[in-house]
Structures are given as C-alpha cells and as structure tokens.
Length: 104
Image 1 (cartoon, rainbow, N blue to C red):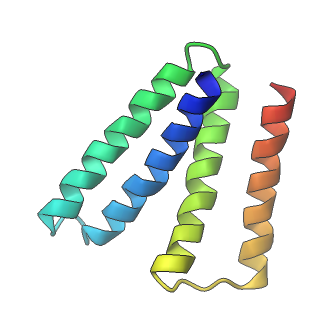
Image 2 (cartoon, one colour; image 1 turned 120 degrees about the vertical axis):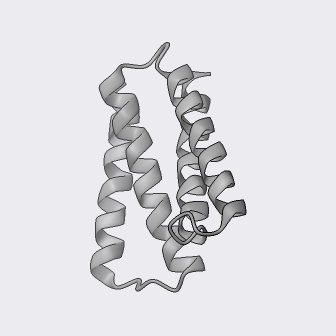
C-alpha cells in the first residue's frame, strides 16, 4: 500500500499545483481553497507512505512525480512550451523515478 499512497501523494501534488496556478497568487478563493486542501492531502498520503518506505526514496519519488506531472499539466492546460529539451529533461526525471522504484 505504501507505493499506492505515494502515487496518490504525487497525483495530489500535481493537482494542487494546477489549482495554485488557477488561484492567481491566492486572488481567486475557490482554486486557492482547493490548492490548500489537495496540497494537504498530498502531504497526508506522503506521510502514510513513509510508514514503510525510506524517506529519501519516498521524497525523491514524490517530488519527481509532482515535478514531471506539473510540467506536463503546464504544457497541456496552460499552453507552456513543449520544446525537445524540456521533454528530454522530463524523461530524465521519469527515468530516475522508475530507477528508484526498481532499487527500493
């Protein structure tokens, strides 16, 4: 279950960043509240995963999922540039996440 909790934490982190962008610096209250709630859920699921997983591995995977996923959300929903260099570095993050999963 620890890996499921970690995946949920990463997905919640991506979602929180999505709502944070929509909040426009906490100027819009609905996305602001959603960002805080989903961000809190992310920390909660991360804490559950830490019951079984090493902290270094869990944190690296959580930030990797959140970072790569947030970049992809930016590309698809906010029309951010998807140049080849960005894609290569996202793939590097994903490769690192998979590698940590394999050795844990």
